[in-house]
Length: 441
View 1 (tube, rainbow, N blue to C red):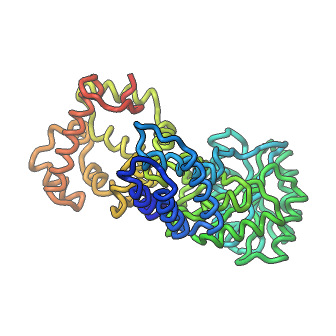
View 2: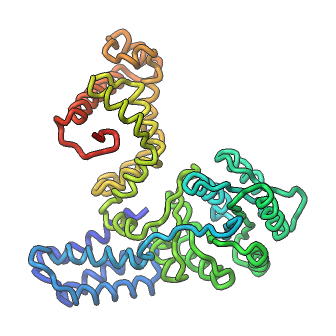
View 3: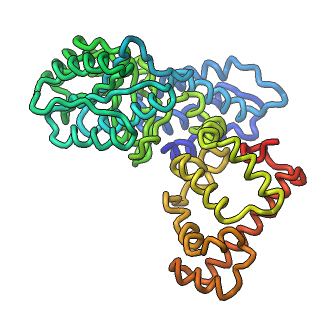
């Protein structure tokens, strides 16, 4: 989402390229370009100006070491100030009380119901809590059904009261039900409107007063840009929420809301969400996001995602097979499935320093492995187990069965064989490679 901003910031730093030191004259032009880049990314104008003023103060007061170039120093200052602007450090969700109540608020269409499912899945899997979802949107006909579908997907029950149009009463009854049935977290999905209105504000305020949540989260559509920030301000004045959730970060958004919202409402941005999958939810880390905005990648988040899919016993078994040159297409497809579980492929690639820029105009869809999976799926169990037996006749049959060409099959077999050789060398210590979980000694 930050590709254009990243490019413009990189161009602004180049103004200092070749300069011997940072001066008020050369830094002024750089900051002018940085401010313009932020405003183009839909960052609030006052926030952008305050930000560049702070950067200027830090830059002019900085003693630049001889070993550090002015452009590098400016990048470091901008990175630190961006992280501070977005909150500095990550803020986790508060789950206090028996049960702990999480109230979800926001406008209609912001993604509240989908987020309710995602945060329920997050709390269940990451926090190990017994979660109950509450269908408190009694106005949108599909809201209750949608929440029930999501609940079934993640194995979390949904509390509903058919015919009851009083969301305050539904929420209160749900908490009583949770206490009686040993649920220690209750997540209340509430109704939204197309715009902020008095009736909605009174209703959500009444629900909050009745259930006394330990956490009130405001969900906002990041694609609405500065409107998202303005709406957050209005909600916060009435609701005094605890944190913000930005949804639809995989859409056509310039990212300005993510940068502006913390300083405007003085509440932390706690989660960012993209896609419809229930695991497409991330804790917001300001310092990591600052790195990504400046094209530095986000290796820490990448490793965390990999570790979530990492099975130590399976990895040990896989290493034995690699060393013995027994790595086969069954193992290969299992590795592909692990990568797919980590999330959107382009998003994953952008976490590797430098890759975001290289892949700027490259489309990497969720079906990137589709052809590979089709070819492997057309192999017999014996062929997947022993790839070396795949001769010309078998290749022709596999191509026909997968709807591909002989060239496609040959290319995959060649790539597989090259990969197998490299993996054997790496596992045997003959090839210097980064220590990934799969190759742990």
